[in-house]
Image 1 (tube, rainbow, N blue to C red):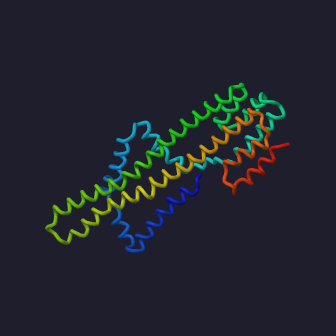
Image 2: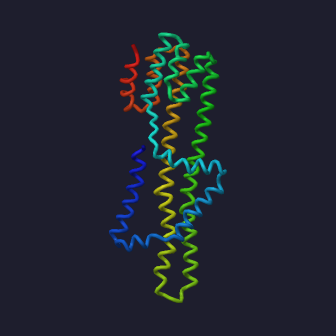
Image 3: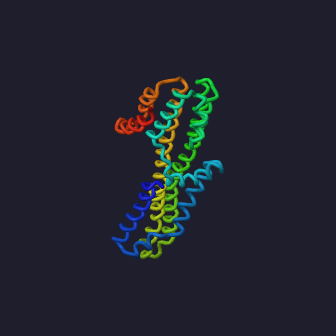
Amino acid sequence: MDIASLAGIILGAVMFVFGVFSNGGFEALKNMVDSASIIITVGGSISGVLAAHKLPDFINGLKGITLTFKEKAEDPAETIKKIIDLSNVARKEGLLALEEAANDIEDDFMKKGVMLVVDGTDPELVRGIMETSLSCMEERHKKVIAFWEKWAELGPAWGMIGTLVGLVIMLQHMTDPSSLGPSMATALITTFYGSLLANWICGPVGNKLKSKNAAEIQAKEIMIEGLLSIQAGENPRVIEEKLKSFMSPKDRPTATEEGAGGEA
């Protein structure tokens, strides 16, 4: 599980409750809940998102929140180590020996690439097939990210719509001056809900999905370059140095240590 995502959401809730409670106790917390405002803000914004997407994309977008909490590690150093191990096998036993090694590979993308290499597919065709798969994967991810970005955009807008509705109702019942304060508070709370929805849930989820997408793309690009280098018969050390360029300088020593263990 991605602890950072879970901790961020929980911490945000705790800070909100503490801030409200410290200024007005349980009564203040009670005043922050208004069912009609929640229906207008959440229901209105989600209906807008539904209208902006096809139904399958909408459903996949909702499911995307589960990806936020999954710790699917795309460790570049580990990916490089696997490539170097495959390179050593190919160097000692030939490319055909990679077919047996592919049975131990869990990543379907890498396994497909290895099998293309074993089958003697032209390198340019291998690159084309794998880059097409990568491009299609990225497009699927972008649709899910766009779902959450759209919801983050519509949340505050529908919150403002709810506030305007509340103000209209308040102005129609101005005969009792004592009710103006509570009515104004109720009207404004929808704006609060919209901002909360965008900045506490939708925005962070969208950003986390972007981060995970970037990490997965980087891992797949490392696989493509590594497998093509193996097919070209390059030295494992040369392949390692080439693939390390995908990593930030501070992370490269780790890759060197792990990669060195793969060479005999």
